[in-house]
Length: 606
Image 1 (cartoon, rainbow, N blue to C red):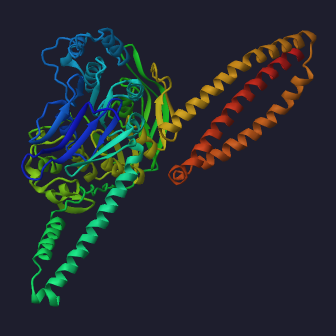
Image 2 (cartoon, one colour; image 1 turned 90 degrees about the horizontal axis):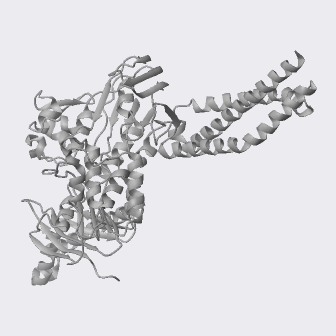
């Protein structure tokens, strides 16, 4: 085993009250790929800052190999003192590092380097910070939420970059798919202590559940042992005759352990407040278009959204996801085409633009809109502190200014406000940012079980696969040109359908020489004044084949019209969608072939 290049041993840190870290350990060896997981507020970011040397623990040992280089990606990078992004990125290089590496990373992350750091968006700031920490190719990379504000193409590029990197890695992220692909070990930070699993994140959740179940069994056994000892103390003959001081001491120790036991952090107890039922047709868009200057963001696009649909919007930053969302909800008017909204719509929106929040406002005031101490949730009046407890906030936090909340706490606060509003149409813009895995699970259940309609924008592939029934994406994701396509199913289903369509195009390209030969034969037949036997046979039989295809398509479309098919049997849904796509392609090919032959026949007969 290689010696560690970073080691944290028995780290203790408290800000008053319950310790944040009460004996946490972390050991990093060359080549390690560690994901650091835990509930919001468990101390993950603090432990990473201790490892980077930005925070000092109150006790415990920290060892960093003297020759090891460490780079830390913080959630809010400081650009003060830098005129350009390139200057900021190059400041992270060491004397022997290659400056060309900065150019390479800026190019792949969609930056020129000449941008003014003061004018960067959230996504651009994250890309600049990634360039700075990746460029030196350090011995250890400490990454805190590296995928926040990044689009899917950039996240997938980053996965590949980290997989081929020689740096040891410790990463905090809410993105399940990202963690599964980059990690080979997991450190779980829970109630101030750390546990290590020498397997990637894919094995974590099953292992965590086993640990918690075993802990519950042990706590139950301890309770029973205390009951037996107390019975002996009260009723045992030996106890009345002569007190056994050792047993009394053991009993006191057991009582102390039992009372001092901190169970795992509770789960969010959230339910959505559903409004009146909307009309069956929620949104109908007919050939809508939108341009800004010379750039077309939305080419002619049509869609019908029905009650119960759950639609995901994906694509690179700047492709026009937010614009399309605003058009579909009526908050932005199209340049051409029509948008028709259904009846009885009650819209609840989760907007992740937290810069719009009044950070001086308190949690209670934000949740009640300044209307006192209570709010109505699902038709019942709730006191704001009781409602906050459902989202894992302490009663004293009701008067806390929003500026004092962590990113995860702000995300839970915004989720609490949205779910309290009666709705039948949920609009979720990046809802997964900063939520821990457990709260993400709950949000997934809420979205999947919602009786109304959901339209969401997300870069979280796992969340999309678990929730949506269709996915809207740019026709050309590498270079969006305003054309959008709706695919059946989640993100993985979209990729599979794109792959199938690409395979069909490749097949068609290979068949082109044969088609040219057939055209030449048709020309020869034209010169001779009659169709060949093969052409006559095709002309007579193609209408029968097309009619049979149309029957099959109608039968499959009827099955796809079932709004509960995807949630009930996603495998059948995906299979039917694939079969339907193939039948439609075959029908289009047969129609084109028949039309060419029919035109040739008319020419010859004329």
